[in-house]
Length: 95
Image (tube, rainbow, N blue to C red; front, side):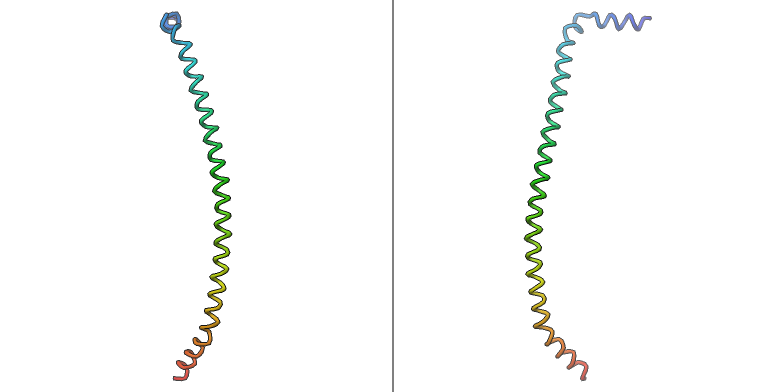
């Protein structure tokens, strides 16, 4: 029973009665701030992801064009060097 008496004494204290509304208001304000911060961060992450995906798509398109150009260049090099390579092989095989 002394615990209940101590809790009652604390809750009846004038300082606790005076500070309790401020404590509740502070907890409500902190909860609201955290909630809005999380929502704001979630929106920013969403925008970053959408922007990043769009930028990545553009970069991939640009890279695929460059890869196509490189493949054409390599094919041209293989065709132009193909005759020379065969000539060298034939020379080495004859000896």
